[in-house]
Length: 348
Ligand SMILES: [Fe+2]
Ligand SMILES: [Fe+2]
Image 1 (spheres, rainbow, N blue to C red):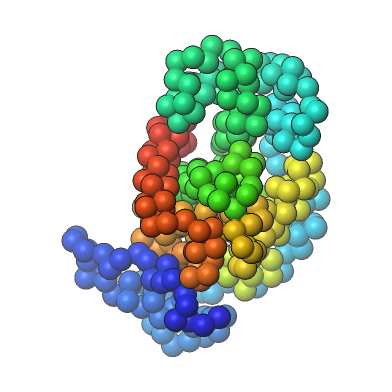
Image 2 (tube, rainbow, N blue to C red):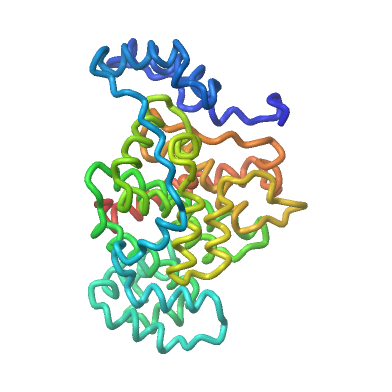
């Protein structure tokens, strides 16, 4: 790829100012360099210097030994993950087929009282355009459509399922805020790539599920990877590949298949880091999620200075044909929606 053609998303975040700015500034400058050192960076004198100065000298953690992780072996340990609610399975089935009975979906949601209450609360929000009019799950399906309700159910039930699994040391708030931001952006972008907005929302919510799965099933290895990515301000996926030989997109897609998610969602999960999936305004679901993911990182909604945004080519940025005003509207609505979602659902 021509580097002059690359939007400088990876240069975010901006140079920090204010308290502790001197130290943060040193870290910020060096992180620009670190990103470009590639796989050999652990041996690089600059990396060692950084570890000594930022990691506490002799106590700095050593680069971890490489642990090869077999994605199939992880996927086969699915029984160790928390059970997904029946309602989520029903609504995912509804996404796959137009013939699924709305009654069975509605019954499955109503069966779970706390889930129904949270779904109704969100369905009545201004976000969905029917505030105060949704009195029952049946109303929600009638007014908003089954696919939209599926998105709300997926968000609510996934959050409570993942919370049960919450492994020590995993930054759930950051993960969940990023998932919501990506889902909201994917929903906004989907019509421009001729994809279904509600399916894009669910794919956005689930795109990094592989991270959560690794954090539950191989917690030590994943904690090392996360800490290396943050120290070096490098993309998590790059460190996963270097250290574990497999990344969260592959793990997430394999588990999604075993959970019986629609094929389109599993494919979007597996391809959400692959560039070049958009042709003449028609984007795959994976391309929509990829674009949403990059922008969610660049918007820095999780407030993490050490978050490395993936690079995005000018062609990819322009592939959906949005105008500058169009983008500005989407970015503003996303910030608003994420603030709303996190407020209404509680991030933890
Ligand atoms: Fe990802
Ligand atoms: Fe992501």
